[in-house]
Image (tube, rainbow, N blue to C red):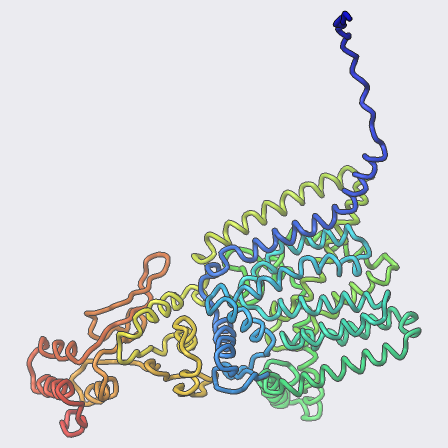
Amino acid sequence: MYRGIIEAEEAPPRPVQRNYYSVTKSAKTMKKYLIPIIILALTLLGLFFRVYKLDQVPFNLNRDELSIGYNAYSLTVNSRDEHGVGPWPLNFQAFGDYKLPGMIYITALSIKLLGLSVWAIRLPNALLTTLLIPVSYFLGKKFLDSKWAAVILTFLLTFSMWHINGARTIYEPIIGLTFSSIGLYFLFNSLNNIKHLFIANIFFAISFFIYNVPLLLLPLLIVVFIIIRNPYFLKFKVQTVIFLAIYFLSAVSFLAITSGVNASRSNTTILTNKEIETTVVENITQLHTSQLPMTVARVFANKPWEIGNRFVHGYLAAYSPTYLFETGDGNAWHNLRSLGYGNMQYILLPFIGVGIYSALKSKNKSHLFLLAYLVLSPIPDALTVDAPITNRLLDFHFALLMLAALGIYNLIDQSKKNNYFKLFLAGSFIFYLATFSQFCVRYFYTFEKNLTVDWRDGVRLLAEQVASVEDQYDKIYVSSQIDMPYIYFVFFGKYNPVKFQQSAVWIKDGFDKAIEFNPYQVTHLAFPGVTGESMKRISEVFPEGVNKVLYISKIDDRNLNINAKIIITDYEGKELWQAEELSLEMIRDYYQAATPSAQRNLMLDYVNECINDSCPDPEIYNLE
């Protein structure tokens, strides 16, 4: 059978059928996951800014970081603090300032996993600070009553200079803010589920053990929140009363447990500061000597009047634009003044103003609570003698960011009708990112060169290098020119905590200081000379069994000036510190090269006896 081959004509292309349902579904899916993706991206970006070069910027560690780090290390070794108190203490004596236990135990966990290092002790702070970024979204939805306003808040916090700087050292106040914010979220969420009140209590209690501010601020916020939402809580009277009772018991228990901490800080509040009493007496005396009757003088000069005056001054200082946007507080450990920044960017000021106006105009109860948050948050700081201090004003900064987010959100809404608002918002956004970019460059690459001496004193490098040669010397003498020298050498030398607890000799000189722990001793050396005092000093520096020592001091405090093993310089090459090797043989050579004299010969004989046997009693040489 014959088969023919028939070539079929090419069929015309069929029109593409759009699946409207599929497109709509994809759009809905994208819309559903858009905000979670944004929050995740901001969180990861925020984490990068908070951990990048974490162990290098800032390079030096302040003494509180070192103290928390070493006490945490001590816990991992034998469950005791550096003073040997334990096991598992809740009051950490530290420098006599008694630190709260929360951050020390959190840091101990990191050290247990990663070992003792700058990175290990700073990492928990960076992670828990970053946690506030996603928390701010959920809390922002409650305060601002808008998910997109909450996204704006999350964006602002991610790029916030005060938050980034606080994340990069061991900074208890900022971790306290994270936990108290989680507690506030659950307090808000109790409006949907009353049981969340008790979850809020857990996070409030944790925040107490991190920093003191939540203990003072949270009761005010809780009372105001219940008053604003009074009709709801009246429906759950029993649960509300139980919640308040548990909160009260938690606060009282905390105060009882940490009594040492609170006693050590009594002189920092205007209610108990002794200086205020002195000022009152001086004012009364001045008024009375100016011919005012004593009764009248006491009316215008008394303790309540002085406390009230200082409280108002401290409270208003928190709102100072100079403090917020230009200088920060006076603590070089926590401000960005050396880089030319305050705590916040000036571009946020108009948005904060719009946010305050919007909240005042609104009848929204969440906005009313936000205004209460703003008004109440400076109170803990105002109760202290040195306000404003950023440590105690982080809630205030957070409230300002919320109001800025509310202001931006409302202006975006208005910009739909007004092109000028669009231009203003676009320009502000560009300026904000440009300023932040400049901040990053300065912070990560020039910060160290612009810091005050509190941060760039070179002691970290000194301690690290001395630790590497520690075993080569019978004794290491450290000049008291270093502030709290012991904490640098035990931390960077990873000094065995058990050995430190057993050998440390402590003194109280404003702070508790360890002045001796084998082989270290804090002292000042000033020799050689040709006096009886020089003989006595040599015998003290070189007791029996000690021949070679290292003396750590400022560069202008050299002794023999011939054998500096370590020299630490600043970024400009200026010499700051030295570690000078000293031995009895070197001292003998020094005297042998000196101009001959009777006194010099006596000193030479004395040093030779020290070398051959042990240093005799200097008094037998009768050298003045």
